[in-house]
Image (tube, rainbow, N blue to C red):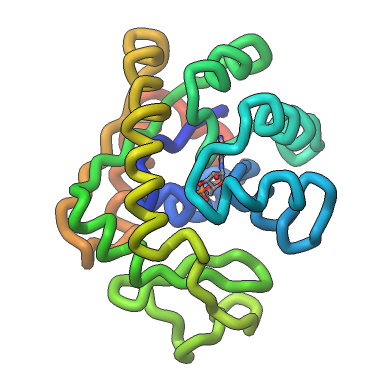
Amino acid sequence: MKLVIFGPPGSGKGTYASRLKSELNIATISTGDIFREAVKQGTELGKRIKKYLDTGQLVPDETVIKAVRNRIAKPDCEKGFILDGFPRTVEQAKTLEKAVKIDVIIKLLVPKQIIIERLSNRRTCKSCGAIYNLRALKPEKEGICDKCGGPLIQRKDDTIPVIKERFQVFEKQTRPLMEYYESKVPFINVTCNDIDMPPEEAIEQIMKELKKLNLTRTSRSD
Ligand code: AMP
């Protein structure tokens, strides 16, 4: 199964992708995580793209496509994968289409106020990348990752001016993608109008819809 999680910054793509990964037992590919790791490691790629991440701009298509191609070629993607944060432009979608058939797009619909509240309360584990929220998804110990004990930090691009920029980029460059996919790929729409809605509720809804589409064959429960 190959699925794309689509939504504006802060709509919960990363959280849902990591939960669906355990439900479906397939790989997740987060281009944001790949790029943040490259910046953290100080690789050539990391040095080239840091400015885009820090300012909320999109990394050039060519670079993104290369990174995704390399990632998809890894053995853990053989059974399928969840794409989180990719594609983000029509150009990226067209290139993806040549290599892979996407089975379904999970589209997250979240009001802007909730997103701003979420992003400004988001904390990420510096070591393993796990995502927390100081309101809806608190760690057991303040400032410490439940999974690996690493320190929780606020992403540089989760500050108000960069959040605003990321929204603009989303509206201009990423939203038009939905028109491109319309009538090509089935959609599962997930609405979240409540900041305190636990991620499990959305996951349950997504799993039900995937079953209806007969897309849960790789699930652990099957
Ligand atoms: P994310 O964690 O998905 O919000 O991504 C963080 C940042 O990584 C974005 O603001 C972009 O600078 C870059 N990025 C991630 N995915 C893409 C993509 N598909 N195309 C271009 N830039 C991307």
